[in-house]
Amino acid sequence: MKFKLRQMEIFRAVMITGTISGAARMLFISQPAVSKLLSHTETNLRLKLFHRSKGKLIPTPEAHNLFNEVNQVYEAALKVDAFAENLSANPSGKIHICCSPSLGLDIVPSVLQLFSEKYPDTRIHFHTTLIQDIPLELLSRKSDIAISVLPVEHPNLSVETLIRGKMVCAVPQTHPFATRSEISLHDLQDQKLILYSRQIPFGQLLNVSAEKHGVTLSPIIDVPRAELACSLVSKDVGIAIVDQFSVGNQLWRNLVVRPLVEEISIRVSLIESKFDNPSTETRNFKTILKKYLKQTYAST
Image 1 (cartoon, rainbow, N blue to C red):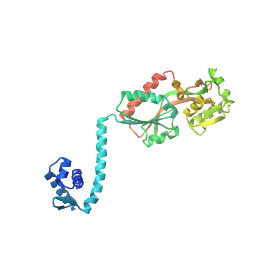
Image 2: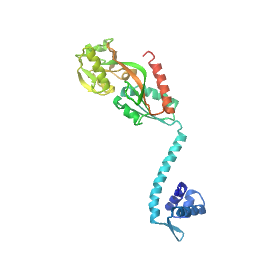
Image 3: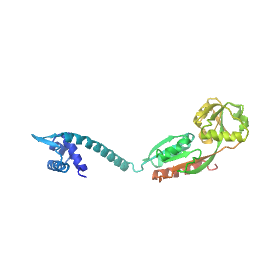
Image 4: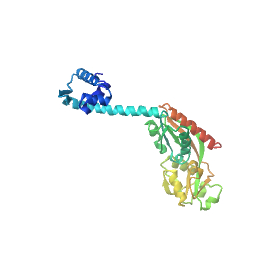
């Protein structure tokens, strides 16, 4: 490389200050060192960068053009320097996590609380995403790890079942069904229902179960996510069928949870790209996640 980084730094300092002495002060080096390196740079590049006039350096047109390029390199070097400094100050790095919306209401926030307490220097990027978007999240490396309330089938993803769960009924507290110990799909045929859209995996799962048991369920409102259904139930709009993890830990007021007679099983899964080796942060998160689920859902 004819134009080395140190030469770029000195050239830039001379362009900014306009003098050898100014560049020397800016870089905390001697004037002869600046003069020698500047002359060496012109020789190597075979370019006249400055005209000398009464102790001042007048940049040539070539110097102005070169300065624009050098500034871009300098800005990039500053970013690298800041990144390296951040690594030193924050050696634990960062982790990008996504999960199904219903798991983002209680389970994952609870795990992140434990994780951030144990690894306070790790920067966490967390968001929810729909099940059908998880493959893109992981394979495009927008996320390091995904936690889904349903398994995702993809040849380039590894899927590990963590715990099993069920679909349940979310019932307004004032509804007559709130006093029941369990509710059947047949009981819901004449009720105002808030159900997942049939275009999404949860809706398809529920539709298969309803057909299996000879039940026709007609919703008054279709929703894409559990928290929307639960919000409507809490406002006494109707009854919803949601996964048990979206209604755990008394998340919703004016809403009671009742089991379904007909079991509709779900599985909380840990999903990763087969192309990536898990980082230390990802492995640490997985350890805490599994421990939390084992302790919280031991009988599941």
